Image (tube, rainbow, N blue to C red):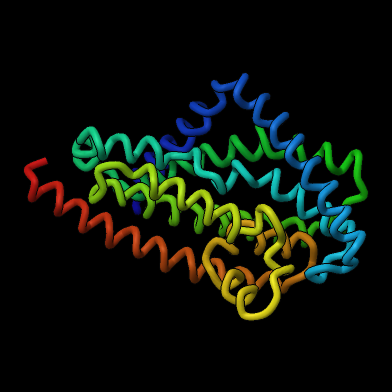
Length: 268
């Protein structure tokens, strides 16, 4: 990717940021919703960890912190969707994607840049406030050194890359399905459960726990949360996340090529 292409995708990302920044009422409503949902989860966790101290290897403060990390990253990482995928699937359905394919830009990188701008806005516009609320009213297990915060930032970027790759694959399914709503809803449900949004994946015992922690969705929330909480080695976590990101982005590239040939064959 040359300098000109880099400028193009930077402009696309900036456009994605500005686009979501215009939805001020929705942002305020989202902050309120995430804060309320965070409170519900916190008091559920307090009751659960009160009965089972150190469940999943977390103490009570870590469990509460995990909740507010989840609320900060919920929309940032598109755990329940709501990013570019709905628009891309609609463009595929209407045939407007044919215009996208004629752009002097790669389809995957274009939507990745768009989603990057959205994620950056969601982090600061919707994610920070609930976390600050949690830090103000609850005893959180916050890192005491800058290195851990920086390590968390890297893990969060890799988590976004994995999340984007999953959602890009979901969106491309619209090339073969008349209605991709079912695929989207299934991906949301799987994402909620397998990312650790409802419960930390560390609490699941035995073979089932090993399986869910090995799936790509664990890269999205569980992995960065464990880096933040000091429960995992950052470098091994990065390797795990990067491996899944590379595999899924490559799969997206291959599926995009197949979809492009399908459009050409159909005369699109």
